[in-house]
Length: 405
Image (cartoon, rainbow, N blue to C red; front, top):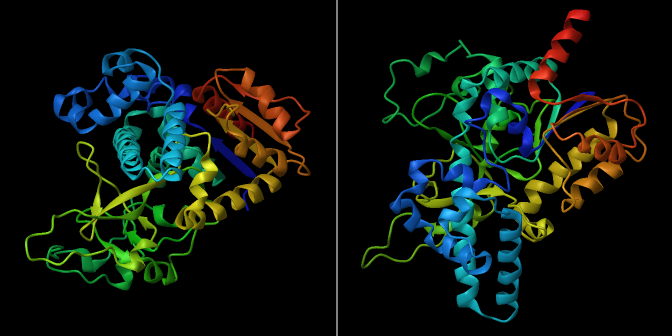
């Protein structure tokens, strides 16, 4: 197990100087960032999520124009939706519950679609490229609260392209050939193979290679001798935009005379690892069924998600693993996470993990220096803390340490 643990929060983009124009939105400025883009300001996209705008205007008196220019707390919004949904269920108001579920789904899809566009920007940031090189070299355990796959993309880029392309992939028409050879099963376009980097196994896996998307059953994928999970991994405590579950909603309509088809029971329990594509608030699909990202949206009642057996199956082992690695780490690097007062489960995680573990080194990367004392208290750390105001300063620190070695 790695002696170094990195903890990354949504504020990681705030500490990247050369990413100011491209940085993903935070919980408070999501609409401000999203509505800078013509696509999300358009009438067509607005019509898709008008139900969301109407809901926000009803309770917060903010229209789309106001949301584009002033902060709005997504955690407050999702918490309100959760409380009202629970109340509707308790009072058997099924129509109201359905309406609230649609609002929550549309808002969640909006967030997923916006965030999914930022992964490609890794190549435009020298800072993120260098950060990826540090992570790939150190091979630490990474704990992150972010849904996006920016860190994965940075590590892939640092690992380099895998030159050992299976011969079977040359000269083949991927639209006609569906069989995947054993050699192809272990091949990844990058030397770091994303499906092996999360500490958990998926029931269906998209092979991480260029070209036509290819999916294999998880049992076959992980049974390959070369597809063992990495000993250093990314623990995504709130889920990820490339983790999915099937929705019991068919992509294509039922034609007259056709029998109604229900989602197969085995698919109800499947956890899928694929690259999701949203298009104007329409969710991605697989096997003719819509799929939904497995993410814990910002809400005060995150434990509510664990009422769902599939979410329990995903997140319980991840949180246990996070506690295990924090309880044994010697060096902790906290980047862009501020430990908000409303996130007590994370505070509990740290307080329990460091109740006996004596940390050797603590580094905090955050322009807000008030975070330093929060982290010290949660880790019971009494020594001087190394503080960096941004990621560039952290990179300089690492370069200096490498030079001294």
